[in-house]
Image (tube, rainbow, N blue to C red):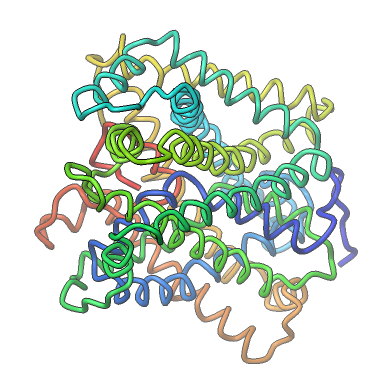
Length: 480
């Protein structure tokens, strides 16, 4: 087959792609949820199970998404249309691309609102807004913010504007420049906070909480959580990795590149635990299991009492903003790429148009915290329904269909050629995992996310949701 070229440009290097894909995967959930579920489910024992799940589930699907993107060289919708016509003669597989783009739309509509809250808290920290506060005052600060739809809308608009600006500048001038700047800065901020943590008396306790193997805590539910986390944490099933794969140069190894992304995502998540939990254990009333409230209601108390709290509080919330920013551009890119390809708009006009629609959808999330908080249906508020549709249905279903298409619909000749692995052991392992292991695991994660196993396992309010559901602040049913 004649090789296609991307109309949007290419990543300049393999490292640029790894930084971009890792930026997509590293979001708000890496900062608080992953370290917590590690410590709560057996420490080092859970990490071992999680890594096995990542290799068996996350890595094969990520390789498949990159492969599909690079072979099609278009937006996920057009890529799936082109490849399905070539491989099966059916155009219906393009619905997988549509599902990913719609999921990205929905997720970014509420992601932007919570990322806006991170911007707001960064501003408060700079102004010493947390100095000497107690639990009641921390709760009051959060309730004042969420109770004001005007302020929530302002910060939602501010954050989304940053995302639109970057995506509108294109692949190399926008996306690549941002991730080359922010990912190293994110790592530096994390290391600075880890350095502070090491100096605390509670660092050994935090390290033990994260890494001490406790196989007695490895329940069936813990394994299911690991399965779900391995899928959801890598931004799979939403078209972001497929879109980024479309810009990957031809001579870059897909397997090694996907492996680099997986390692970076896991490393950042564990590093975040070493940064946050020494602070958590140093102050009474701040629990590592506080869930989403840890970010906006518990940690500000600690920052308000600790030496250098203004500096480290500001660094922490900047860290959240950077993690959210790199994720948000990947959520918007698939839709913008499709608009450029199909409607003939410039990147700037396409980004502004897509951003405007997402901004409008985000108003539903803003009002769900205040004026519309009493309006509930199906899964709950407007926010609850948007989050549930995207995270519990569209993402796992998209990941499942991607695995089926790559493993069963595409010919072995096509996949072997694009992966560049030949037909040796490496290729056969990928084919086995993408055909049998990954689909079954995603189905299990899907059912677990819907709470199907809760009655069987005797657990409540713990599902396998990952990276993107990390933004849920009030809904403990969907922690990420």
